[in-house]
Length: 156
Image (cartoon, rainbow, N blue to C red; front, side):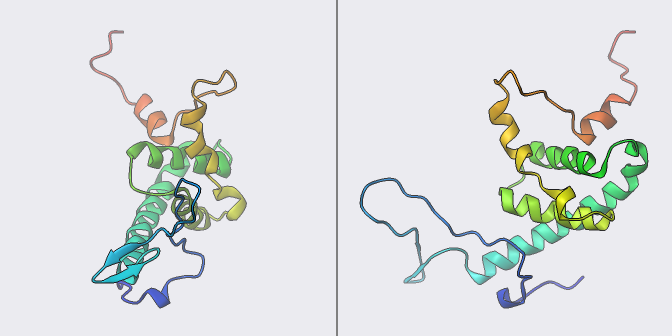
């Protein structure tokens, strides 16, 4: 796989970072000073690096998901992808919600699904709901796989 070198060659559906929220009454501009120039959002190099990382993650997750899908064939694809996304979120990788959705869409397509199967916003919101009575924790695919392994330290 060749590395992207130009931000103009990025897929149109790949999310761009750059929106910022600054508190206060007066209008503000979220910008950074780079080499004497104010830059709003990502630089081309930053965008290319984010895309390469997300594309690499999507490729690796698709390969893993294809191998593991046989073990979880009873789960609908949407639930399987939701659990996979939860495992990704639990890893603590630096993905925002739009990047996670983009990665999971790539995985969904690789498994024969589509956009409706890949939406993962509730995965990112779920930790905030942990104190709610309506929240029922669901184990991730990784948690399920680990629970099926024999545990030598667990007394039987």
